[in-house]
Image (tube, rainbow, N blue to C red):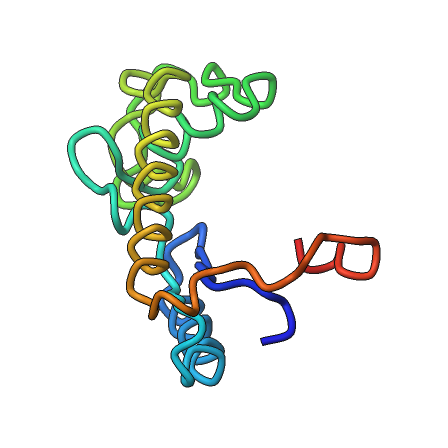
Length: 149
């Protein structure tokens, strides 16, 4: 393979099954000869549990945003009244009330667990390749290959 990469992981950041299917379909010819391993997945596929999950603008997604972009989250905009159930207008929230359950710390833990699990999956996929197919195949990353990073 021209790129030299041995493992490719495509991550759908918003649990769109069709996107994950598209990634896996695109990987089929790339992994067919056994010199590259790859998978498409949802960012929390491998870490989902009590400390890592997702929702729709509720505890998990709001916590992730509070961790990554704290200046862009203003929970006071939700007011103090009850939230509409099941992602209905006007708030569109699906999950635990972010006013009570979201925090930058929850987001950091969620992100750390997802990243760790994806990293472990990358190592597992690399180890699944024949030993002679595990090395990066470019001598260096030069301006001509920057687009591949």
